[in-house]
Image (cartoon, rainbow, N blue to C red; front, side, top):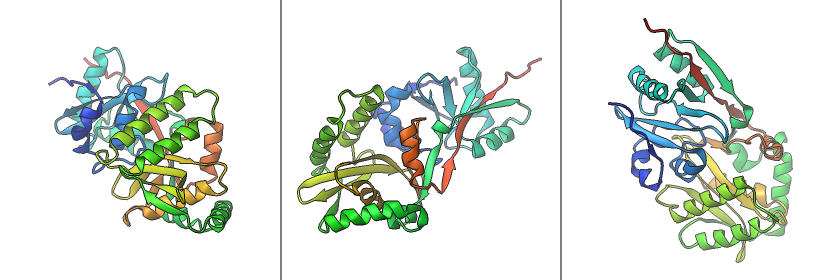
Length: 304
């Protein structure tokens, strides 16, 4: 049966939960919350084919449509054939997106006689950190973060990290309004982010999100939340703190890491989107590894 794609919406939640995070790859965009919240921005569509989740989206605005490596099967050739047939009817080659260190060998194994070309941009790569490093802020590379965190706790020894719940979400919303008010005008990417956060707050538990607020008395100094990507990896989707409060950002990051389940070993702090300031901020945290993403394009097969 031909692939019947449909747009990802909140109504897709149960379908997506069948596969994620249990069969997730570690891509920061493959939490259920991120898929739904960013669906309009990425023009994301999906289908379930032979008990396999297939997803088609744009890697970024202006980029061509790509398919994610099928989720739920070992890169099954029959599913790839259906994806290629669908693409051909649109006049497109089959483009497959994912972690290149896994994607290329998987496609070569499934389609050994096909010619591939590869496209990647560092703007798409995820920054990975060891959970223990962020929690403890130990080591020479993080001494600056550690010092700022100490300044925060010295100034506010009674500060506390409070879980995000239906009771505390209104406090997050109030803080977010103040946070965005610093800008004379919001860019389109900021507007997309704000919409994604509001959707997350509307369905926080249903989307299986986890996070907390950093509070001094009744004052919110920041909040952060994310979602599990795999059994051992957690994506930090959002992190907002008051820049007027010295050390709030590293204190918040450390407390979120400390609050996570014991089995979480890695934190995925997402891509830098090619934004210089964001790249510097993520590099300052000294990533332990990079999740190198890109897509491969299959050259048309030669049919007799």
